Amino acid sequence: MKNSVEINETIKPFNKSIDIEGDKSLSIRWALLASQAKGKSRSFNLLRSEDVMNTLKCLKKLGIKIKLSNKFCEITGNGLNGFRYKKNINLDAGNSGTLGRLIMGLLVHCREKIKIIGDKSLSKRDFSRISEPLKLFGANFKTNLGKLPVTISGTDRPVPIKYFEKKGSAQCKSSIMLAALNTKGETCIKAKKSRDHTEILFKHLNLPIKILKKKDYDLIKIRGKNNFKPLNYKIPSDISSSAFFIVLAALSSKSKINIRNVNINPSRSGVIKILKKMGVKILIKNLRIYKGEKIANIHVTSKENLKSIHCPTSLNSSAIDEFLLVFLVAAKAKGISTFKKLSELNQKESPRLIWGSKILRKMGIKTILSKDSIKIYGNPSLRLNKKIVIKNYLKDHRVFMTSVIAALTFGGKWKIYDKNSINTSFPSFINKIRMIGAKVN
Image 1: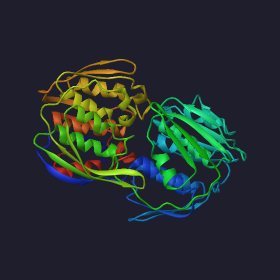
Image 2 (image 1 turned 90 degrees about the vertical axis):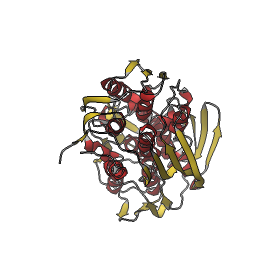
Image 3 (image 1 turned 135 degrees about the vertical axis):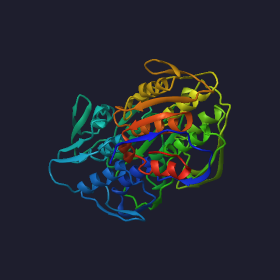
Image 4 (image 1 turned 120 degrees about the vertical axis):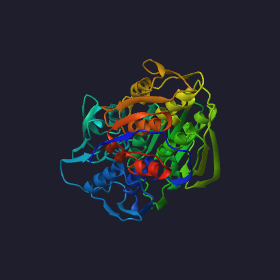
């Protein structure tokens, strides 16, 4: 089966309602926490992507019983410090930074050596931001110059720590929180603002956590060694996956879309705030709270006259996975858009800030790129009639899907490689856009 797609025409006007698979961040976090609960936890609408399946495989290697059916996933946890495993095992995180980094926090108390490995893309990413704070608990780490593979030798007497997380990395913060679960005493984290799914789950599980929210950071205190009950969870739809269809509707002529039951957690929904500032017509309907998370239906109507933006850096962390899509909207907006302090964008599956600029330039959009910033000179009348080939982008699923949205909205004849990359986060992406009417060969 070929690993590329060809798109030769824009999508026709549409008016559709769709459902998107479960949130990847919540799917992985649910599985990791379920492994530490005492008893059987069930999830519904668990994302069946490679990243989540690799999470389940790693937990099985650690002696956790897992039942996966068409309707649900059931994990039988053995309680805190309940992993049972052979000596010298390897845990393969595949392409998932969330899995690779978060599971390290659950292993600080494991005395036998455990090696974490990943694919070529994940092996280029920084893991020292996780190993350094986790060393303070008493565990030992051997890394490849701060990258994978990482070998962990834990301790049976982890000590609580105080740590200042300065990067705004939810993965770093969450890994420390998971380590604190198995650590007697109070761990204190001063953390720059980032996604708060882990904190919300801790609260829902009635774990002893205190959070003091300041303007620029949160102060999080966790008292460890408290067993907790299983968690049954219907996982809401993923805002990052939904964003592709938000932008598809926004940039398509005379089109509307309704995306149901999406997690619009404020620490994740910066893309909605940014696009609204740019003139995209977005309505939030049927807002409710489910197990601490905000869930709603998102209605989007296409808009011809889009505005450029000087994007507030305060929105960066809450839209970090969606900036490639935001760049497409900026390409069609009137005026010059500026985005600053986006160095974290180059710490993802690929250097996305660089790739985002390259794709826009292939489309004929002028960009000025610096180490952590980009200026995009929008062209509202841009209509492509040339051939564009997208390949060699380190198999980044968001680069692939963003390129598909660009082809369907700006025109031209596109050949886009690395289709299989979508399996890491959104396996049904191609089928979904075909259901809406896109012609993807």
